[in-house]
Image 1 (tube, one colour):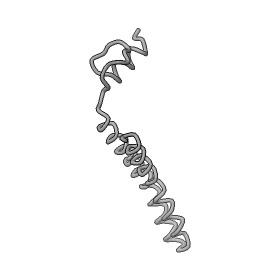
Image 2 (cartoon, helix red, strand yellow):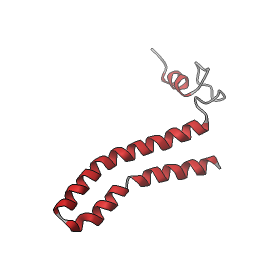
Image 3 (spheres, one colour):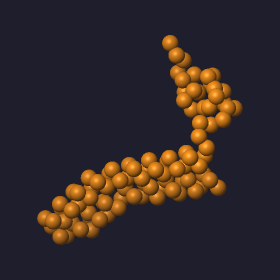
Image 4 (tube, helix red, strand yellow):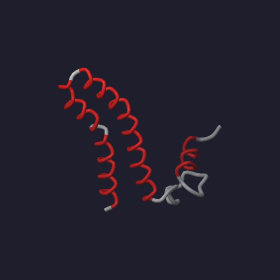
Length: 92
């Protein structure tokens, strides 16, 4: 049976078969930051797909729902903005 700590060490670190803290990371910091922002944007886009369709349907039935629909459509984008802020804070 494979030891879970050895498996995590192989997945998270390069050139290592044992859990050694001093080995190189699996990806550079810039690549990790790009992956973080990209996945946050992908998740926000997926959320906006359903929210946008529901908001358009609500506005088609009642014009007073435009403000609520707009706010709910833009809300997932705050996730991407937060990811960008975190990347810039960590990079400094």
